[in-house]
Length: 172
Image 1: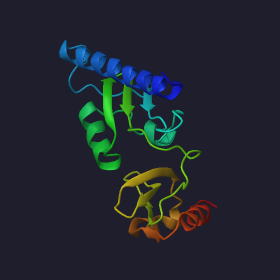
Image 2: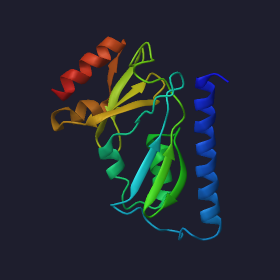
Image 3: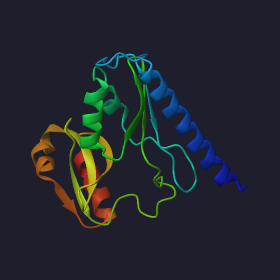
């Protein structure tokens, strides 16, 4: 079996084991309903490149820190709003596992940013890049106050290069 297929099978196997463990723990009452994620909780965000299987980090650490204090239901609602493609695999006060679907990493992607789209804000005033359909591509960082009004309206771009230049202007 070629190495990439073996890695994919290993990733799928790990996700299945984590899901089974989460479902088993909740089924038998190990996680109290309404329990919130502690500030010191370990939050694992899982995503791999669909081409090279490199681990990716689709959410900035500052965003993950904002998940502390959220219950599973609150985190699920937050993910549905900001990252609709993400799924909670397991949740306990001291650990949560969130999985994103595979995507192309920056090294494998011919274009880092979409052809068209806009730069806007997340609910927590982080800079985010959206494609033309309004699907969030990436969270880029905390938005500077001087750009909040323009970002709230959305700053359109029509090429990956224009997107990159706008991000440099906004963050410098």
